[in-house]
Image 1: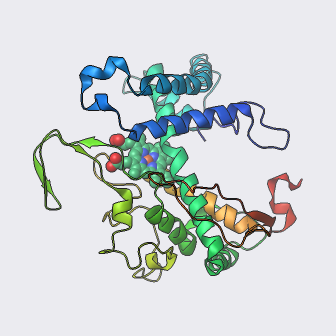
Image 2: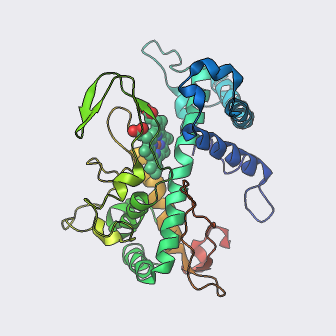
Image 3: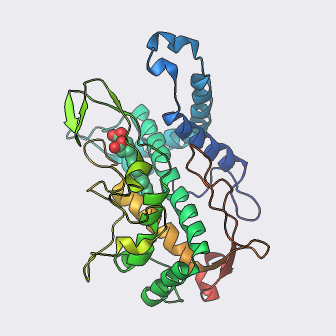
Length: 331
Ligand code: HEM
């Protein structure tokens, strides 16, 4: 979406991601892991230069890898626009490059565009993929939920075309499954750390100015005062109280769960993030019959202590279930 291309490199002969993608995605997840990791110099800045945990070194290398892929594309696009070779926006990078101020000068500098590109990649990559891996794992252990989702998709979309964005308002059960995964299995235990700029009282807690505030996503999503049987994967809970014609949405402004958070520092990518999640999930559920591998009774849902991923990455069997012409590679 950012660069109007699927891969940085050639990809593998079987159509999968190649070495470049693997190096790139690893750099993103390394960076994300370090957003949350404890670092003594956050509290004793005098120690920063010593880089005791080695985080600065790791982050510099991850940033170098991301920049290696982003920068040539960004610079080339800015050049093309300057030389009048590109007019209509075809992707998000075109949009950023073509923004102008009141005097028709570029609104963003090259450095700002590079930073935005990096930020968008970091912000968008982990939440949808993690939530959907968990949702599918949970649903494979509860086949009635998979069946309900497929029934909904077949009713709304049929079997002769792929899911489109215009179908989303009618895919409440699919969205309820994704929302349930955000509730039960958020990608990170906490939202990014914030610092309070003034003394305040929130939810009965006094928070002095300068405190580091980290809200627990799991603590909210699994709060037994709010959710019945909080550890059960039960998409139906998001349909209760949803009136006829009302849409299930993935954001939760009441903060009963923390999908996108809210307020001034809440996620600015709610619409895009919700669409990415719904599209990815709906197409996977609609396009394939999923089953547990023959030699395995159930999917192992264990989660390593202090981590958000499945302990064992999901392995499942996928069989196409739509008319053959619908699959892009069928021609
Ligand atoms: C399903 C997808 C996504 C989820 C669940 C999600 C969730 C979140 C959450 C929980 C935060 C922290 C909010 C806080 O600190 O209070 C956040 C921050 C942010 N998100 Fe998202 N996000 C998603 C997709 C995206 C996308 C697609 C973009 C942009 C293209 C984006 C851009 C950002 C940015 C820039 C921030 C930092 C905001 C700030 O610190 O001021 N997110 N997101």
